[in-house]
Amino acid sequence: MNSFLWVTDMTDQNTPIQPKFSKIDSVASQVGLGKSTVLAWESTGKFPRAVRLSHTVRVWLQQDIDNWILEQHGKSLTKKVGGEL
Image 1 (cartoon, one colour):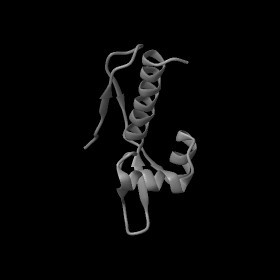
Image 2 (image 1 turned 45 degrees about the horizontal axis):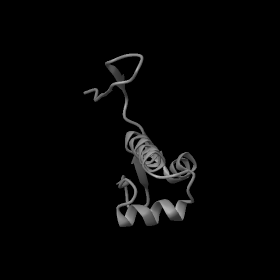
Image 3 (image 1 turned 180 degrees about the vertical axis):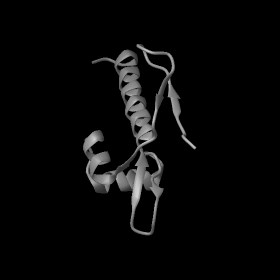
Image 4 (image 1 turned 90 degrees about the vertical axis):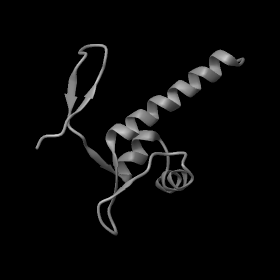
């Protein structure tokens, strides 16, 4: 069974994407944080929850990371609009 997530973007209203997992090194690099910060923020709820594939393997759904990045960007825009620069 193929599972697809459907996203809406500016170019194509119905773009199917394959879900993808990312490991801690990739996640930390994408968000500009250290691995220990990612793990600490995850434990406090400030960062998306990882998926445990085994006792030693922890991964994140890439879409969760992408959404988190966009959410942080939106928060920074709100601060700039609402406050003085």
